[in-house]
Image (cartoon, rainbow, N blue to C red):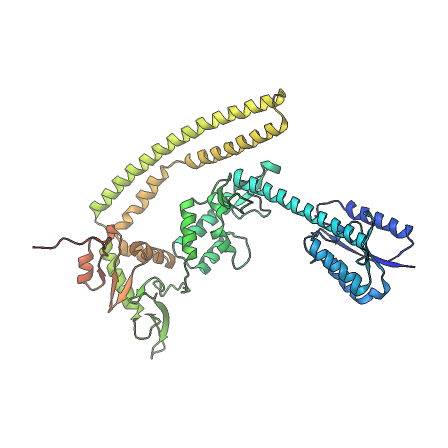
Length: 507
């Protein structure tokens, strides 16, 4: 009696197991009708035929290599269960017959593959080619559908929801909705990154706040994901371009912020900074050679530790942290803004906030008017559908378009509606801090100190020959620049903005 093994497979885990049962039924009938003994069965559930890297198919190959002398046939329901790659499939089938003398039988197609029989070889090759063509056509339809859904409809289709969002709705109506609690963490991550907070510290704060994504690159993926800017990344399809397209979901960060983060991520940061409260300026202040200063404690003769800021080049800066901090506090003291200037800022800020509040009220009114118009159009489409004036496809297309537009408008109204008057309270509560910068700096934590230095000097604070130096400082803090130099704490030499302009000469 001839002996056989069989291989069964279906592609998607969502498919009914009846697919396997049907394959078992047909192969059982073939075995019984042809009086063939079944030795073993190999079944791959939810595995694609695009590759041979399938668990049970690998076991099948190992079984044949070991027991080929006791097996005559390999049964499949159809050749496409075996593979949809015609070239690889033909090569493997020939190997089974040439090396192991095992023939492949497709029971429902009535094909016994025999490499030495031209008709059999042609029919098997044709079936495999047809299966591969069908696979290509399916792939084109799927990729075309994905392109349309993402590029033209702005839908987010990834299975796992991004942190900061929830998935709402079913089918084509499924969309992302902002999770306010998680969104605050995302905003904090972006904000800290732009404030030059070290990545390890961002991770630490994010996880303490409730960030639940695992992996060393979890924060990096959040920073690089365009979904947070209300965009969706689309792969090119045929002649249609790929890239970033507007999405229908509400963004968590604005596009400008996201773009700034991407630009910063492209820059290679070779200096890893560890936050230490004893040396807050480490990695923020630079040596005159341009290298960010490191910092470390050094043990004195008495056994007490003293902190120093150092350049990696041995003959460059090696500054006592005590001296560096005293000098910088003197700089802060001289940066304090006069009371009359604070009054000018307060008056100007009030005017700007009032103008912004008025502009937002107008925008909200316009959005509400637009929302009413879209709701009326949606009602009109529904009435036409009820009266059978339009078909189902037309109704679904317009319903999807109007529904997405309504969601966008409601999100915009909600974003613009909060009482902007809170800004007045924040302004009143914090503006007086400008009158005593030294006190404000002293009471700040290390992250705030680092952010302050980078913001005020635009990342251009250097130390050379016992004094701080900078080519850039915020105008509001530069009014005592000459006194800073007289007291030996900071030299401010502004760079010429346009070197192509020749300065006017004297007589």
